[in-house]
Amino acid sequence: MKGEKDNKFHAPGTLVLAFIFLGFFIALYFINWVMLSGTWAVR
Amino acid sequence: MNITQESAFRTCSVTGLRVHLPAQKLIITNAVAAVVFLLIGGILALLIALTRWEVVQLLPADLYYRFLSVHGTVMLVFWIVFFEVAGLYFGGTVLLNARLLRPGLGWFAFVLMLAGAVMSTLVTFAGGADIMFTAYVPLKAHPLFYLGVILFAVGALLAVGLFLATVIVAKKEKRYTGSVPLVTYGLIAAAIIAVFTLVSGAIVFVPAFLWSLGIISSFDPGAYRVLFWAFGHPAQQINLSAMVAVWYALATLTTGAKPVNEKLSRFAFLLYILFINLGSVHHLMVDPALSQANRIFNTSYFFYLAVLGSLIHAYSIPAGVEVAQRAKGYAKGLFQWLVKAPWKEPGFAALAVSFVIFGFIGGTSGVIQGMQVNMIAHNTLRIPGHFHATVVGGTTLAFMGLAYYLIPLMTRRQLVGKAWASAQPYIYGVGVTMLSLGMLWSGILGVPRRTYDIAASSAGVAAPAYAGSDVTLAIMGVGAVIAVIGGAIFVGIAVLTLLTGKKMK
Ligand code: HEM
Ligand SMILES: [Cu+2]
Image 1 (cartoon, protein in one colour):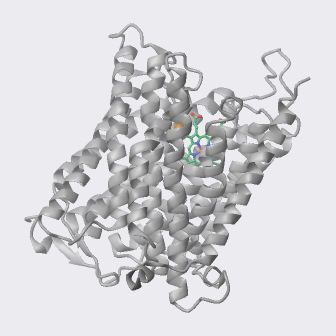
Image 2 (tube, helix red, strand yellow):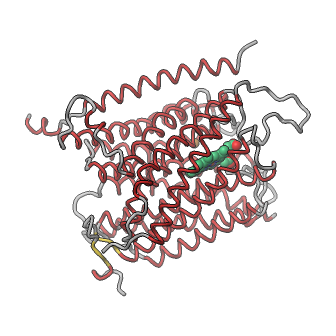
């Protein structure tokens, strides 16, 4: 048990950054399609 | 002088690292060649960017295509690979406390690379190879262009072999204990990918050379494309692995960070070796030679395993910095560790900016464009927009950051203009960000890449309007000017340090 605890590290800030990145990617992914739909409109 | 003798080493008084002197000379020489090519490529970058900025349109059409061809090769192959060879020799000797096995072979490799690089650059400048980076058959260049690239690739292959042999012998001679440091491990991953890449390069350029000489009558364009991308895409994975290795090095150097889970980081490098080459197929999405199953597997499933490797590094590097900073007492709240990071240290600034541009712009655009919208993004400015975020904002900037430590360590001269070096990554970063976003956005509007005049004014046909591209191309143009200024600051610091830096004891 003790050995396991030694292996743990504490980096909560990085976890938040990872989620910011995830949110950024999701936003970008949708913006991509919205913008492309403007360029390649089906008329 | 017997190069195995202890007298062939010196001990650095600042870092305590032991430096093998014959290796040191080779490291400096390769790095100098790299910087010279960066300078050439940078000047051309400004000229072609100011041509693509439609309202400026600086160059005449023929020079635009010619300089575009030189810019691509000089930057993506010569600058990057010369610097990587310097990095390999550093990681294989200094970081392992080891000697470079055969310095003579290193010099032979260097001469081949330099001769090849100079030859193909001159031929292209002279108008013998206006065929752009990809050199797609049946576009035909002068035979000496292909010969130059082949010489360069053979030289680079020898250098990679020398590095691998050096690492193996260092282990045998017990120059270090345990497994190799993570940075060297990442460089070994890069070197392994490099062997595959450079052999593919030879396989594609040798027949092209013979074809251009007239010895072979034709070269199937489909075969060329498959072979070329067995070189062109893996080459970027060498850059990726080497860049990540440099990130780990910079994090340790500037904050004392250690990998939070070294085994996992090593595993992530392994994922690069195993899977990323298969992603090459994203360049061949409509090539009739490949089966649909091949394309789907390689560009989706296998590609994602390589992306997983990058995500592991993307987590473990900031986490390592956070742990190190918290241990120093910057433990308040979620982000004191980040706020109190050494933002004025050139290496940390380069790491942070390179990391953010690579991840937030390069990585995301690669994942989005590489697959689902591949065909819509194809041949638009979205493509250079993506890779200027990866290979310029990411790799090139990381290498610049490393150079700020490598140059003083190797030349024993104090860095000239440390304050400039601290500001440089930010200036360059702002420039490359604008350049990339301007290109990406233009590409989304449909603006093609490798096109002198998007209005097609001399063609007598109605070109699309690309509404809004006047603004996005201006963002690209202004970004290019800022990025080139940032690049010039780096070159200035490097050259001045080499020539006039104060000698350290
Ligand atoms: C200040 C820095 C830079 C600026 C302003 C810049 C600008 C440009 C521009 C405007 C293009 C032409 C896009 C087109 O018309 O299709 C281009 C192409 C390219 N650049 Fe850069 N670039 C820079 C640095 C780099 C670096 C450092 C590398 C490599 C490490 C690089 C690699 C390439 C490649 C491979 C191409 C494509 C060539 C082709 O289409 O055949 N660039 N760059
Ligand atoms: Cu690729």
